[in-house]
Image 1 (spheres, helix red, strand yellow):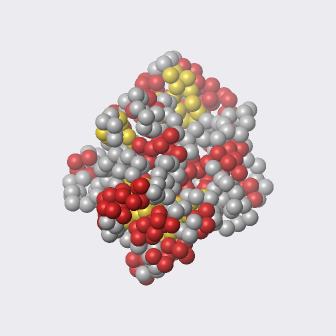
Image 2 (cartoon, rainbow, N blue to C red):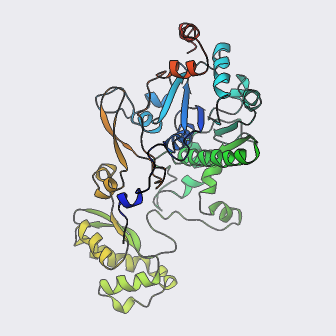
Image 3 (cartoon, rainbow, N blue to C red):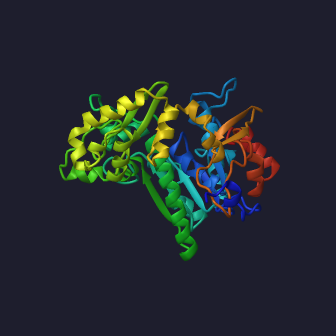
Length: 405
């Protein structure tokens, strides 16, 4: 019997923020990859303090805006569950306060170009003088070492450099980047994974360490072995919505939209062939179907065009085959399954507006995760954080007056 959410969370604790409750993370990041790594850790229950320059970082100004608001969707999405502290890390007083914060920290995350923070006196060697067992996570385009490490590297450049964009898109088209910040997202996830692995090692041995995450490395790793194929001279083709190892499998037009449907296994094809009234073709193996791609695609095309998306999806489900309507993100927000998984959380923002934010994707039965608090205003927690480090009200006010905090 399938679980429902009440069954899954029956033994959940309510006294913890998540499995990383009690872990402190400090981030000095901008835009997406670094903030995403910290977002994952914040969603998992860590106390994350985001440190921004007093002018704020790029995500606060990056479109699209929340309707009728000056707040941005990107900032609200990736900086929820965090506290916010403004410090000019380039100024001596800002560095001094920051090092006091680092002394209380388990994990530090940054995504500046390699060399920037050491130039500010905030490199790994500098920060470990304040916290010897610190885990110092650096996320960059090309990594902290290597022949291209000094280059600026942003998400679309990483997609282009590592070969990913060369295979994306329709066969007759040109190289195409992903519609999302795929390299940033993967680097953020690997940054969070690396931080947690290093934390486990520290808890066992007392040793901190550096963690070096490069966008291009992460995209290569998540490329299904294609870099190996390239090194071996194995030709790689752009397939669009199809596969080189499955037929039929594609997007198909219905009377009211499009579906994605198809088969991967020979047993699936046998069921589909019978359902299409072509039992005479059911014996075809994958290798025998591949050269008949156009013919078999045409069968499924004719079947779908005479039906609605809902009919095709229901028909496939009845015979145990995968199919889905091709949704827009607006369609997705209305899907009952999304609601049943609580994947959009209605959240009140700093300006009082309520919007549905994408929820943490990993479900923990004992230590549930959730959106605990909205993205913070710039400098919203300055007094709270700095007072917790022992600064007096006068010292906190002086930082603000001098434009440092």
